Image 1: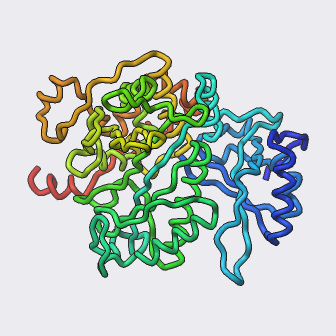
Image 2: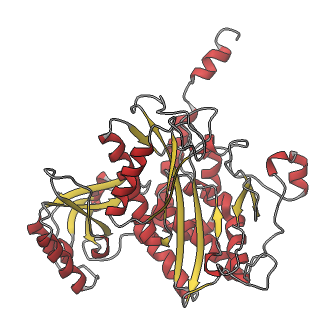
Image 3: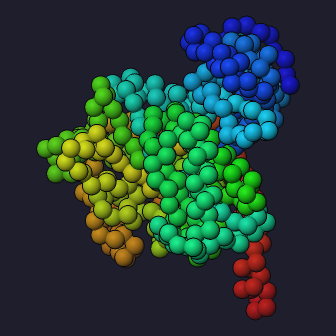
Length: 454
């Protein structure tokens, strides 16, 4: 591990750091896992002993950034991970197991400056822009879907249950309950738990939280879901479309802005109960959806999910009831003004949540700043319209492939602003490489279709 000169680099509350050290002693923590993500959202971790934590909290721990996807090249690779005291959590454990806690880190350069390649910093910058526009909180509530398979070598399902199934077919009910207990033990409140539409497909919904907290929750959620499944002898995957002919896994994301404890999206006098702020925010996301698709749907496989007919939104429109639209406004209930929100249905659960929440926030704020007009809602099932009818109504589609999505991203000033030049350039390069590697592959489909007849 790289050694860097030690000097006070932490900017967190000193009292919060002391409280963490007190908990480490009081709860007899044996190892601390320090977490951060690469630009694709893969979780990175290293462990330190309690004796090192005081120095880590004050000065951070050095590491080689050249080995992390999207970070700096080897000639400027020294990085420092500084634990955020607010993220201290004891990981799920049983008697006889090693007692481990985790903290999520902000990555900085050796001189203590925020590192522009850190996805967590990208989200912090988006929240700074939000604050400058007079908003206090960006609340986010993502609904992550996932599949459970017998192992990681295939897609043999555990059940054939369907949406909200409560039958003996749902073999994973107990596993879901154990997963919920583990998530709540690390401070992640859970609201809904149920079987999803696909065979062996599940959803555990976290209670909404401010965006940075929720991004931290999301990377933790994915790890815990996988670990609980593995301990039971199964494999959990957040791959967007693992089974041909079945629904893929989405991450429908509910969003709202708050100021002075009030929901900035609500207007009781409006026919849709949406304020001008809420309308402009949604308009911004609709206008820039194609440009940021490569962020919220970042994999080749993501675009196998984003096709008509499997409940995945493809068409850039909004609605109050229509789940085929990209953005849905849940119906207003009298007395529930604070719950007014927009639900964007295109992200998938394999995205980098820091970059995704940042890109969605920037797109919405762009709409507010520039006063974008919200088009009329599309209450018709968009899958039933012909291409001509969609063109007449001005409805465009999301990109159909990662290659198309990356081309849109590469030409987007909003995406460059949201991600920052460092991540923007590396992200485009990384995703173009992924698309190029995929598009030259020969598939079984091609061999079966062409080999005998051409």
